[in-house]
Length: 434
Ligand code: AMP
Image (cartoon, rainbow, N blue to C red; front, side, top):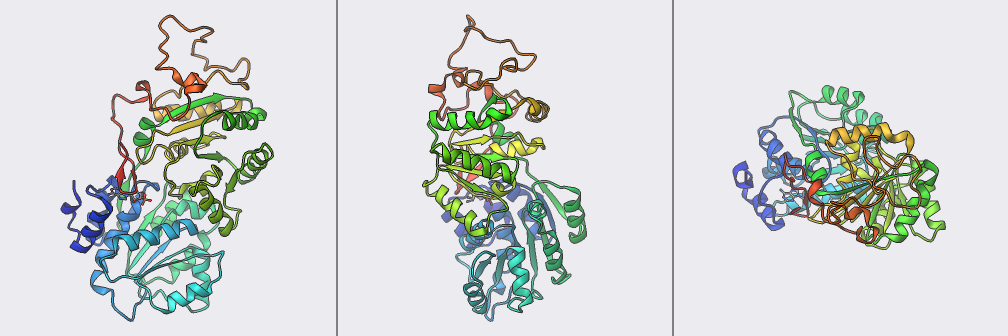
């Protein structure tokens, strides 16, 4: 399918063309048509799937005849973090550049004055984080009675960051007659209840990144005892040729501990998680994106919405409790056509989690046996033979992940590509990953 088949108006088509987009991504294919018809939407999709354009295009099109002064807020997009709010604002500006629209983003952690000045100049589309929005509503800088389109993005992340109460309050200020788009990567009960309460007969669009990420990323597994994880991490970061790595920690406290240990070992690193101020997170992200810091340690939730290009490695320090999260995490690499590498650590207690993950992705993750912190007795899966020497039919090319010198930026070896399902594209900056 091509964008031309989606009844998108010429000025938006032109903007999409400028971006080099020709084909809609799966979430866009599923969502844009029904949204243009005025349906509500329940979307299950991650960053990287093109979900922003999936809701931005129909909103811009729906409002295209209504961008007039005096401007009133006609579309509200709620996002959990400042980084996401800015990314969404940029998308609206990009896709709406041939329309007379005005989009601004407001978020906490910075002075409100420049934001209230911008608001005073009039705005059609407002992208906001919940806390700052409520603040400005209470101060009467913002009125929501003209909102026709409401988007709740990354709802489960908002729940995790303790924002759901604010979100409910904001929803109570919205007109009842409106079109609502609800996005969440996962559907915990509280989120499902919220979705149910605010959506009217929604179209459901689900895009799981499972096949795309699993098939194109070079995955590696290190068995390691828990106390040795930090030593193995330092060892790998010092010995592998890593351009940029996102390290996933299960907890915020864990992320801080990792950063501390890395810095002491002479490896500059920064942490990004929900307990950090917006400013600290933004600074860490900028430093990482500008390649000033090549190690970013994040909790899963904080990392999820980040649109980071060209990540050569992800490192899963703690295996996630929810198997799908593994797929989301490794999906942070291998974008934009780069052969990414996803390294996972697994300690004795995490073996059950590993089993669940391998069941979900329907393959075993290749193990790196040879490393200084390989635990005795736990070197292999119970069903796997131990290679004490190279077997006669040893194919070095296929097993090159065992050779540390060849460890960097390998292309996925043939064995890691599913036969049933070919690699699916991921989308980044207008380019389809090859
Ligand atoms: P998102 O999931 O909205 O954060 O989008 C991820 C990336 O995909 C963004 O950097 C967009 O520039 C890009 N993108 C969105 N739609 C398309 C498309 N139809 N074709 C190619 N790239 C796209």
